Length: 330
Image (cartoon, rainbow, N blue to C red; front, side, top):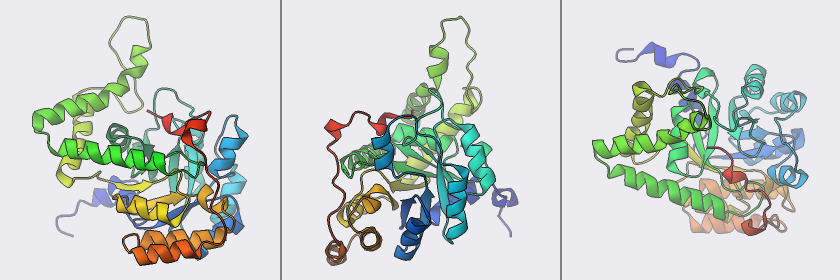
């Protein structure tokens, strides 16, 4: 295998983790809470399922501290489906993430839908053998997560609302900032890297003691740290997109919503409450998969909309929400 670095092919390498994430490209990943819902997802053609005890709409309604799902529940989903299984950990909660990795889930979502555990930092995802997906509302967030080892980025949207406007907002902002980075020269890229890195100083800035040493889970904030962030930005400039697949999530409730996000350049769709809070989940699941696969064919999307049996989930105006989940994370 001339020209191939075999170290890149080892389990846990960026190449393998990003490659797994890329295998989901063009598809729909569905939140499921039990074997019955997992069967609905698999039968509809979902590329993967996200195992969690409650769909985001119910997590939002219940309030309180939302933690990772019980291992027995996650294991039940692992045992009953043949497609990849993902599961959520809290932001910054290595304990939960290590449990999920040990259980054999295929990908971890370090998710703002659950209550954040660390007010300063996300998980060091490069320290894990399995891939992570993380949410982002702008390019700076996305670059930080990729620098930390995320193999997939998703718009945060506003999960559990059935309202696609936040997902659209985040996709628009990320694309706008990608276009800005594409126009930067090397000096401008250095300034952009400094801007992205600035958020990592948050812990040291909270201290009132003298000294300059800064502690992060990702190592010292030194020249190598900056070079790593700059490399991600350089990839964005060269590729005209993030160097990892980018899905849309948060508020997708109809086949038309799924088509819209794919038309905006997303690589795939996460959906949960939008299916299982509709009047007829199996038909809605089929319809969203169809609309995602044929997002640029208006006749097919219209066919998908006509398939929907009963009303979609009711949905919420964002202005009425007590808690904005998309504002969690940093």
